[in-house]
Every structure is written in structure tokens, then in C-alpha cells.
Image 1 (spheres, helix red, strand yellow):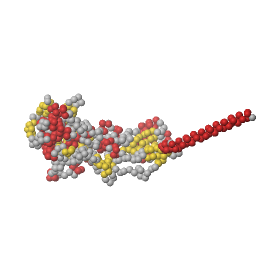
Image 2 (image 1 turned 60 degrees about the horizontal axis):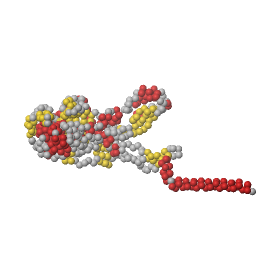
Image 3 (image 1 turned 90 degrees about the horizontal axis):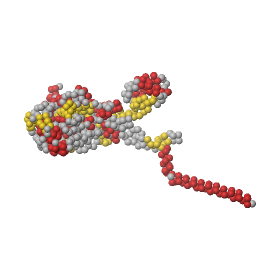
Image 4 (image 1 turned 120 degrees about the vertical axis):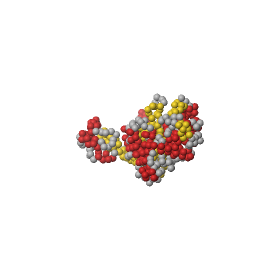
Length: 582
């Protein structure tokens, strides 16, 4: 009997252990289920949802850029990338290469591809050959009509500039990722990009992604476009005129600015040489900057009217003041002389009319240097204009102590040397002379407008500062009119129209110090119409082989003004004179 009970006890013990293990396992399972379902339920649901869903930002086109008349300057269009898979060609590689090269030749692509180039590509591998990027729609239609198996076209967006280089220095360009790299495309990236919500996709059992929780009209795009102050008609004419003059005088570069003096809006801004933003990759990167905004230069005699205005404003001189011009003077061991060597008793008007350096030194000597310096600072020298164009360089003015302690600093500043500014800032200062003394902010943007012309957002500009009295500017403009009538700016004269102007020919600073004996920069600024001054036209020509501002730059301004007169319908000052000419 005892021997039978032992196996039974062992059996019961094992059974008990099994039950204990089962119960413990069941309890563990219940606890784990409670932990997973209750304690971590929400977290696990979110994790599963995250694994099964994917977020994506849909492509939406950038807003177009248009000129003041609604002409398109930049717009997004659909382009294509061409891939080749030679292993499934239904024709010979040679035939496909020949037919394809003929089509691609007229597609204005980044690189010209000959039939030999294509054949070499086809022989390198059997599939996945990237042939060309940014193929336009009309070219893809021709490729499709070849009916060649193994030619694959992948659709993608492309920023297109239909006017090519017309306004490249203003508009700029975007790179392959649709990110602005220059001009308005860069500075107004936030305005040009449309904001859209992310799309959420849900992954099905077989891995297929389908949109999840889409709301009605979630991809409804606005019809806004960015409107500029640029006039394409004037821009086109100005570029042609500038190109011709640069070629004639073999100049390094040039720029022309046409500004509305009343509000600072820029009707035309041209810099040459330029580039085609559709093919920016084919150009030197130095062309991508707008040197009218990014580079400073010594303005020379075109700054003389500004200095005369400063002297008149503080009462240091009168409009009829007379100074004896010796033709040559020495200031602190530095000789200063007139370019033509002339001299004699001259009124302020004659000093401007004949662009006398010595006469200008005499004028600024009537002001304490501190007053002169403070006046220059009040005009914004040493700062930027605050334009909406990117990468603007501040003007450069010597430090106050140096200016006050070294006599030659004020003397050279009198005739526009020893300091530097951008062409845009010089145009701004001449706008102040034109509009009665207000310092306006140069700008190229008007704002965002819908397809019906209604404003959605408009550029907000600071209130203009009064830097001269209207009495002062009226006197200075009268002096500048004499420059065009019978002075150094006669080549800008237009029969029937009263135009104020000033020539400038300045030495360029040498890399080794001092000034170059050969390199110079010539310029001319014109203001019209004298009856109600509104427009400022500035031309700056860098390193012409020969010629002064009156010879090189004044004819450019004259031609641009003629176009401006036609476009803006500016009536003549003397109708009888115009009628007699006709």
C-alpha cells in the first residue's frame, strides 16, 4: 500500500504544479492584456496608426510674377525628365539616337545632345539612363509620337521665365528645388510659395497607399500673383539701348534705373551683361547679383547737385552766390583741379553747369565740416536705401573723426569722390531733388493681387523723410536744367522738353591704393519734366574705353527718356517747338 501511494502523491504534485503554472500563465496573460489594452492602449494605437500612415506635402506651383501691366515674368509650368531603357527598344539604338537627337536639338536644353552622344549613353547600360531634364510639353509630344518602347517621360514642375533675360536682375531665378536664389524670387520666397496642408495616406494590406481624411477643396489654390512696378516695354527698350552703348565704348558693364520720384517705384532697372534665368546654370555666378544694388562706386560729379542742395539748405550759400574758381587748388598737399583746367568768377549755377571741381570745394568750404558731415549722414550715407531687392550694399562714408580732422576728405567729397554708394542710392537722392526734398524708398513690388485685380496684400513703405525744402530743390533743379541746355549734358537735350541733368566721370579706386589712371566710371542722371518733376533716369557705365559721362551716358538717358515720354504720354514743355520739329 505505501508503495502505491507514493506514485499517486507524485502524480498529484505534478498535476498541482501544472495547474499553478497554468494559473500563473493565465494571470500573466491577463495582466499583459490589461497592460497592452488599458495602460498602453492609446499609445499602441497611435504607433500602429503611424506605421500604417504616411504624410506628404503635395506639390503646388509658386505664384506667378507679373509686371505693372500684367505681363508674365515668371510662372510654373509642367516639364519632363526623359529616361531611356535600351533593352526594350523596338528599334535599333542607332535609329532611336538619330530620331531623338533631332527632336531634342530644338528643345533649348541644358546640354546639346548629338546622335553620337545618345548612342554612347545607350551602350553604357541597358536600363535607367537619364537622358535629359526640363523637357517642355511640346517636345514631349514629339517624343511620344515616335512610338519607341523604352523611352520614359517623368512629369515634374519647372519655373519658366517667358521673357528670358528681360528682367533677370529684378526677378532672379529658382534652383532645381524651386528655391529662390536671386532677385525677387529669393527675397520674396514666402510670398511666392503657396501654403497647403499635408496629405495623409493610409497603407492598405497589400502596401497600397490611399489618401485618408481628405476634406473638400483641400487643394484649392488661390489665384494670386506678385505684381511688380517694372514696365516690360520700357525695360526692353532700355536693355537694347544699354547693350548698344556698351558695345560701342567696349565698357565692362552698365546699369540704367528709371524711378518714379513721387513714391520710389522703379519702372525699369537694367544691368548688363545679364543672363537667362531659364538657363542660369550656363552663366557665371557673378552675373546673378544686381550690381546696381550690390556694388558701390564713387559717383563723381553726379553728386555735385546734392552737395549744393546741402549748402543751400543750411544757408551757407545763396542761389546767386559767386566764387572765384582758380582752376587748381591744393588741400593738405593734395592737388585738386578742374578736368578742363578752366577757371574764373562763377556763380553756383555755372559751377554745376561746367562741373567745376574747384568751385565745388569753394562751396562746401562755406559749411563747417561737422555740418557737412551731418548733412551727408541725414541723407542716408553709410546706410542702405531699404529697397525690397536683396543683397543691398550700404554706402560707405569715412568716419566722423577722419572727415573732420583731414581737410582733403571734405574737399574730395565735394565733387563726389572719397566715398561710395550704389547706383540705386544715387537715384534715390536725385528723386529727393525731383519731388521737393522727400527721401522715398526705392522698390519694385506692388503686392499680391487676384485675377480680378483686387489687392490681397500690398507693400507697406515707411513715410518719406523730408531732407530738403522745396525751395532748395527748385533752385538746384534750375541749375541742373542749365547742364542739359548749355553745359556738359547737352547730348541729353530733347527738343520741346525741359530736362534737368548732371554728368559724372569719376576715377576708379586702384587695387594697389589710390586711383587708377585709366579706369573710370561715367554716368548721367536726368530728371523730367521740369514743370512737374517726376521721373529720374540714371545711367552708369563702368570702364568705357573712351569718353566722358556727357558723351557715353547722356545719350543713353536721352534715348530712354524718349521711350518714357511715349509710354507715359508725357506732354512737351513747349508744344510749338515740337510742332516745328515735325
